[in-house]
Length: 171
Image 1 (cartoon, rainbow, N blue to C red):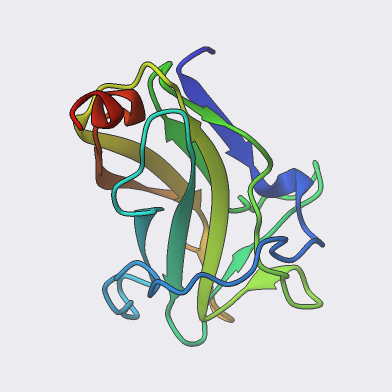
Image 2 (cartoon, rainbow, N blue to C red):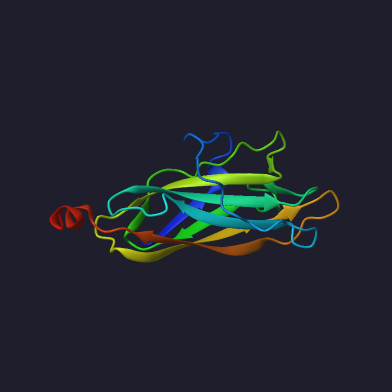
């Protein structure tokens, strides 16, 4: 599975974010509606990372009022919990677990929730524009029904600044 980072939130249901809150605004996601109850967006911080550095993938999920997503389910449950599949190249690797928000007492996510994933950029990543894609799979429910599981394709574009050794040599 090299080249793919699979993050399943089934394993991470009680821990809140371990990092301090970001000073950068959350990614912008459309406002959900009753017929489209979940929207999402991702971003990479910092805006212009350097090779051989750590970055943070921020995933904002917006859930329409009256709806919820499952943070986890047991193996006999017919419901699909939220999960992410991050697709990357060998120049980007996962450095820890997804940091989910804390679900409510029923194991649900509601409203706007943000997930974070630390990634490391290889020293061999080339300067220039790059993109990271993520599949978000979820099952939205409300008191009357549970929608079939859905998948949203998300993309974060970022630009790698010049290698530090190139900057030193250009002085």
